[in-house]
Image (cartoon, rainbow, N blue to C red):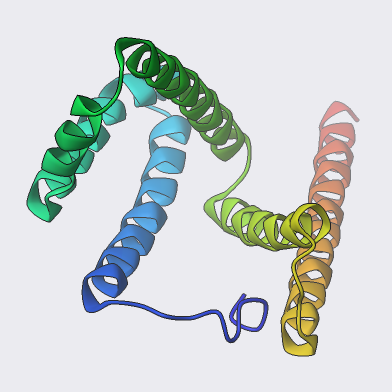
Length: 184
């Protein structure tokens, strides 16, 4: 992924810290949600996870917003909007919330059926495909190094999918062979 975005880096220390914190928390979330959904004693449904995790994520977002002064900027921004513009903004935010809910539900469902590693590979492929889509839609220019990084990541994702599929196919064959020996 580093090659795919080479040259695009600029940052603030706060942004860097929040990015690292977000990355660590995302990895922990992926592993823990997978564990909670596959627990033999009491597996949780994706909707149960959303019910438990959404309030915590909201509190975290509101806390960051308050600490960084974004809440006061939002209040100032809303004061300058007409009632009709505020209603349009509320509608857009509601649609965004519905899409975020759907995204998280699908993500938790996929995590339940796969592994944290598969989810990480898929996330990296999603980043590469987002860059490719940006190039296609917005006519962005991609340098040689960026293009090479995208191609390497896509090939790696394809290779991982092939190895994963071969492993699952082999496991099914082994299971069916063992089952056949038990009936003899």
